Amino acid sequence: MTKKRELVSLVSLLLLGFGLLAGCKTTGAPRQTTKTPGTTETTKADVTTETTEAAGASETKEAGGDMKAVEGVLVSAAGVFVSTFAGSKPDWEGFDDGPGAWEGGFADGPGDKAEFAAPAGLALDAEGNLYVADVHNHRIRKITPQGVVRSLAGSSRSGYVDGLGDMARFDRPSGIALDKEGNLYVTDEYNHRIRKIAPWGGVRTLAGDGKTGEEAGGFADGPIGGARFDKPFGIAIDKTGNLYVGDVHNHRIRKITPQGVVSTLAGSGESGYADGPESAAQFYFISGIAVDKAGNLYVADNWNHRIRKITPQGVVSTLAGSGETGKDGCGYADGPKEKARFCFPSGIAVDKAGNLYVADFGNNRIRTITPQGEVGTLAGSGGAGVDEDGFVGGGHADGPGNYAEFDGPSGLAFDAEGNLYVTDRKNHRIRKIEMRD
Image (cartoon, rainbow, N blue to C red; front, side, top):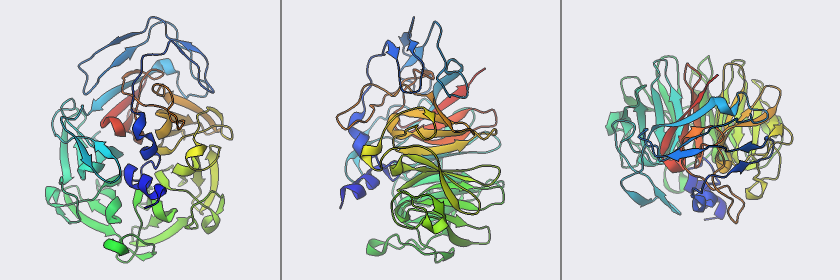
């Protein structure tokens, strides 16, 4: 197996840099002065650190004194607060699922008692319930607005079975989207299928013939029963019910119509970086996908370290990001879109005003992109230090945006009040970002 394939397996294709980041899980002492590219200097005056009883929170940082806003951020960092919504330190760890061991746990119940294992995709319904693709538990979890967690579908054993609730089986479900009728759509990554979960809990296969063994994966457009995917990951739905899927190993964006036809919207099928129309464009391991009101798609182009835009006609352009492809292309810089840098960007979300939010997995930060193309940092201090490969070490701390810490932020979703939820993969928690005036 090549190193690239090992990375893909290790992160469950969410962030293919996860294997490289796995050794960076450290939390250091608070730094007294923070000065990052594209930010103003912020002195941590009168900062206190204390243990809290918040759901799964290990640390909360409260900042006193004046905090200057980060340049390009849509709201002042002083008005951003990060908390832990659900998830706690697992009671057990160490299952080996491919190269490298993953920590994680499984428990339903109140938010501060619940446990996850590398959660990825997120979706929210009109009542404020949160749905989570709990990758290494092979389950879809539901979290009420009060923070109570339960399993909606799937079981602890990976596999492929359609059925009701815990009778169904998935193999590393990763992305998740919700339609107006309350149906959930799940990218079942290692089964190479798109699954559908009805509001009453029934699971069935929507698209993909899957296959197993040496024939697993593949590429084919056409009717849903005969279409083939190769480790689908991100998924989004537009206002007319079309689904869009990030087909990771095919390096394509696939479209599934309500009539059940699968086609390729963009991507040549070869890994690389190229803007242009449909089949001329190239991607390098697609992660998160989001769609705006006008039908434009936004793609976290993981190994190109860029955010790409696809028009409804299939024309691909680069919205933000620069640098080389692969591990050596990682970087961190805020500012104009052509100078901004990301490190294995993962999840992506669009707010009502058209601003983009990006889970910058390798930088352990949540980034923002305005409609004018200015890139800023909304939350995340980046953790402690940089390892020998140049990756930022992660941590777990709640508190104001500039001082909060993440460890592998992944999926993103907004609620009706404008709060942003984040799957913090290597912390095995769901975080909540409130943007206060």
